Length: 402
Image (cartoon, rainbow, N blue to C red; front, side, top):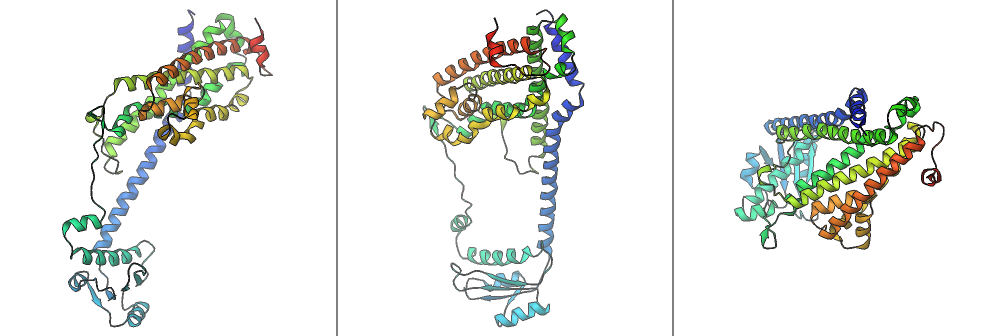
């Protein structure tokens, strides 16, 4: 194992020199930044267009069979009462009138009719906006402030919940433990293929023969696994740091919720559990992917297994509602404790707060033991499959040899 550091340094430097690694690493932040940029530009353009529409004046006539429109407000909006509905519609058709609004007697079953001169698909929206604004302002002028708030559905509510006699906010409690779930998802999604093909590159170009003359198979495979973990952490930081920076720089422009980090509750046990689950889960699936890569002769064949791995990891997301609403069900317990499906259920339930202590300890133990076993199997597969260039190893060959 004295060559372990050499193997790790070689693998890390070699990967960092590849353009594909940096394209993949920066591709996601760049794509998100591009999307946020479009959203910001769209918001700015929409706000400016709305302000321009507010400044535009156009002639209006109104027929109010509902008797709700206030005459003084109609005048303030620049409108007048129409002598007849048909005459007003004819005036709109001839172009002498910009818009005509008809308010039926029964607004519950009927609808506001708007007849207007076409000014473009976007600007045509101003007519309906003005018609509704005129009706809302007229109704609100005759009621008190409390009734206005209720009618606008702008009443605010504050819910304070308690657990064990202490104020408890479930949503805020989820944030810090939930970050490990997000990080696990991103690293597997963006780094999984590289894990699968990490051991096939040397086999395809026949460099593996020279490597194994100076480095033991066990040292080489463990060095690759450790290198992949370090590279995954680097890629994770490349994704997370721009996301956090972008949040603080463009939160107002993107209308994102204001998050006061100083007030976030810190539950050391749940955060520590999330960290251990994340590390054990990542080691487990890194070992699985490296083992598969060692068992097949080419990167193309290794890539064929990525769908199966992703199904095992993210398949439990289809039962996400069960993890929250029925944590005691047998299916949830099975998915939580079965090592190949455990990462997402354990991280999610730990973030929500319904993962019991015995499940946490049992799940972590199962993940750690499984990760160790998978690592040993990966070493064994690599030892016997490193020089297989044309076929993949069978289970009998892997486990049948002494």
